[in-house]
Length: 461
Image (cartoon, rainbow, N blue to C red; front, side):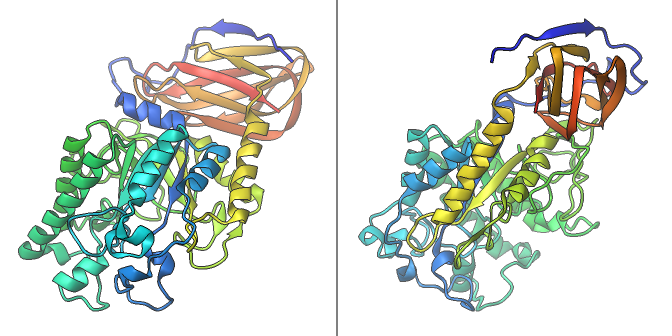
């Protein structure tokens, strides 16, 4: 049914002293803005890990064990698309060190596996399938941990490849950097434009405790990130351009700011608010802009990042909870797919993904009313009393995130009553509440760090 929007626009007055015209918030790049509009992505964790037997030392599973018999990257991508994902990230090289492309840097790769008689290239298959289906491709690598390489060149035999201080050895640093530089050069020059590079464990040495350890691990990631950025300036790199929410549980902090300050005032270190498994709130007055991204393996199905056995789908309400607590708080969400030893995402996981996508469409495809006004105080009236349960607000963040507090009121029997007291909005805020029948809603920004501007307000049931 076609709806008519009746909007009374008003001028915002009376913001607190925190709103000052002279302050200029951190401004996103066009690539960051486009990434935030994608909102939902899929992580494809697939490597030799899926073929490793329980108890095998990481990196010791032979390349000959990698033999997916029915691998179909189009199946992965089609399932992601039906879920509503706009981008995907593949583990081109996970921590065991096995490369899913024919690299020159190691024998521990797809070239030395039975898959397509050593002539396969799953990275190529993946990026081609993504582009075929209108999905933006991204890749994952793990610069700090390469268990197979370290067992050969460093003599690790089940030792601590996750030692924070191992790269303090100058000889090891030089060898590891030469290998990583060549691998990332191959990935970022041979496979076309990538939307995101997930260089896992960025900032690890500074995130585990209140004390920032730094050391050569921080320098290593800075070198890696600078080189990757030179290769593809338009690719968003985890750490430099994208902020990890600080855990893998599928939620973002609230309030949530995409602006931040880093611990050394450069682009190549973690933010001052970043600590593993603690709230990562950002900083409203931060000088860098990094959209926050929340990864989760358990929101859609249980079983860890890599496939080990049958994956149990989560109830839809669990997955939707993660949606509300990430995308609904202004972050992005990347949900895990873990193809099995056939090279397929299991049927029950595909079904769960489709159900999730359908539920998002059911709730948010057909707004009752939408206002595209930029004003920070608006009254949206309905033609007849209308029952609502969700309000989706979007801030115009092209010049930076600004809103730090707002209210939403509903007019019931001629009287206004507050239904939402919110804080940050950023890219998107979803407020959901018990059904209420109303003749109008009134939105008002009550605090901001600079003059705010709205992008849209939509009302749903």
